[in-house]
Structure formats: C-alpha cells, structure tokens
Image (cartoon, rainbow, N blue to C red):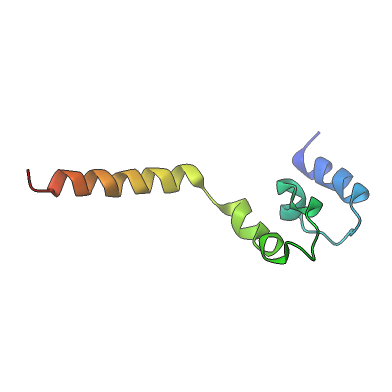
Length: 71
C-alpha cells in the first residue's frame, strides 16, 4: 500500500471530502476548522518543512558565531 492509497482511504473517512492531502497526512483534518483555521491553513507549509535541515542550518550559525567570538 502506498501513501496515495492511504490518503485515498483517509478521504473516505473524513467529514469533508475536499480536505487536502497535506491536511490528511499530518492529521490536521481532525482539528475543528472553526477553532483552528490558521493551523489548518498552514498544512502545506508544515508538510514541506524540513526540520533536520533547519536544525543543521541553526547549528552552523551557532558554531560560526562561537568560532568568531572573542576569547
């Protein structure tokens, strides 16, 4: 079974069949739209967020700052 198959199966179970794949994959479709419209609206950005890359970038910045700090 592929992710696409899983998402198609999930769409059959949700209240709103127009939910996006990102909402379904992240489980955000379970949040009431009236209470969490902004979080649900961020589904696409959250789905494409690369936490590992952001952590590495942040560590690189931190280490570069430490290496240039006066002793």
